[in-house]
Length: 307
Image (cartoon, rainbow, N blue to C red; front, side):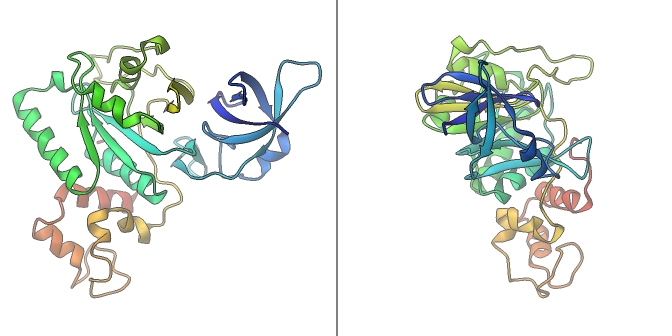
């Protein structure tokens, strides 16, 4: 049976790249949908699948999903009991953030990092649209970058308008399969177009009234930028709900808290109020950033992370 890679998902039809680099429109054999009843998309972009051709038609049927090397998931916004797989079999996740027009909250950044950490997927932070920042905001962004780089996350400042660090962005994605994510309007499509203008991905201006982007990507889709270099573009995410992470393990996915594992007085410490808590002591001493600790508490409480 032939195998292929899912390049695009529209919810009911999938574009599968065949061994000879052709795109085959496929649908899913119904019985596979019953396996993961908590997942609202049984097949994700990046999945390796087995397919067969439909007799007499120019379409195919996906008969099997091959084991995933990894995947990254978020809680469904509309169905709290369900989760949505953003992508599968990726080498890295790249979160595009902007401090203005639109604003990406630190809570959203930290939640994305925790999600990627929980699936052991390396993450790069791209601080885009630096041409829009006033001096005070530039200083603040440098402070944020220092914070996240100290935690082990690669950070790049970019501007497609002023052609800043686009070569570094290109080098970061080269020879890898990367998931690109972020709010609508942060410039994902413009960054991809800067690397490969032939793709001509649709871009939209950010609304000046609401300071929010307009969704230009409706479905997840994977693009081949160049030989052995793929980017998975996802619809702009307004909110990122944690999925498959228990409250007791959230701190494990904060590197600065993970370093203190076993140093609290109580083995089941929640790092919220207990005496002898190494994490609380580190926060008070300034060794753990207050913004990161606030994000941690927000995740424990299941708060909205858009603010």
